[in-house]
Image (cartoon, rainbow, N blue to C red; front, side, top):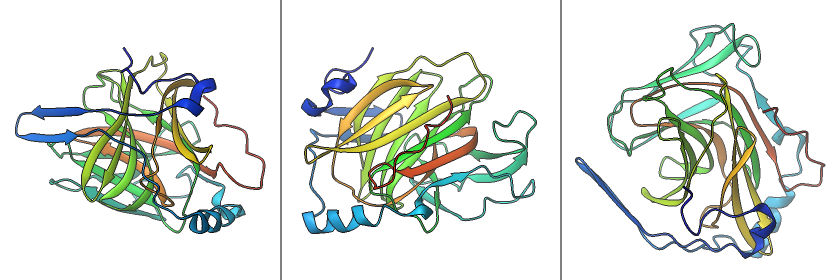
Length: 266
C-alpha cells in the first residue's frame, strides 16, 4: 500500500506537496521524521551557474567495473559512512551472469544498526539534476539485502538516498542533512521474477520546484518534492547488515543542452 501524500501519477507532478510525519523506534535506535517542506538552498544565480556546468560530455558516465581485476577495490570511487559500525567491503568480482560482462561490484556490510549507511561515490563528478540507474542483485533469501543509490552527496552527513528493501518489497526516499535523516517518501514495489533488478531515479526541476522521481524494474514508484540539497556527487549505498551485488551504474545530467541518452534497459 502506498502512503498517502507521497505517491502520484506522473501527469500530476506539478501539484505535488509532500508533508510526512513519522517516528520510528526499534530496539536501541530511534529517529524522528518531522513535517517536511522543500527548502530552496540555492540562489537563482547559483542555480543558473550550476545548470550551465551540467552540459558537459564528461557528466555522461557509465561504470561497469569490467576494466579491473577480480578482488580489487573499485577505482575512481570514495567510500563514506553514516552511522556507527564497521566499514563495508566493496570488491570487484568476476561473475558469469553479470549484466555487463564480466565483472560486478560486490558489497558486504556487517553493520548491525538499521540507521547505518555505507556509501561509495564517484570522484570528480557533480550533478545538479541527475538521471541515475543501476542493476542490483539481492541475496537468494532477500533478508540481508537493503541498498540503492545516493545523489546530491556533499559529504557523509549530507545526501539523498533511494533505498530498496526486497524482503519487505518497499522503496524509500530519504534525506540526510547535518547527520539527521528525514524520510521523504515510501511505497510498495512489485519486483519482477528476475535475478537482476533495475533501480532508477531522476531529479526534475518543474515550475521552480525540484521533484525526485523513482522507478523500480521499469515501473514508476513514488515522487517527492525537496530542494534541501543541491549539486553533489552520485553513487551507491547499503543500509544495515547487507550483502548486495551491483553492476552498470549510469549517470547523466537530466537538465542540460544535450538530448537525453536512451534510458537504461530494464
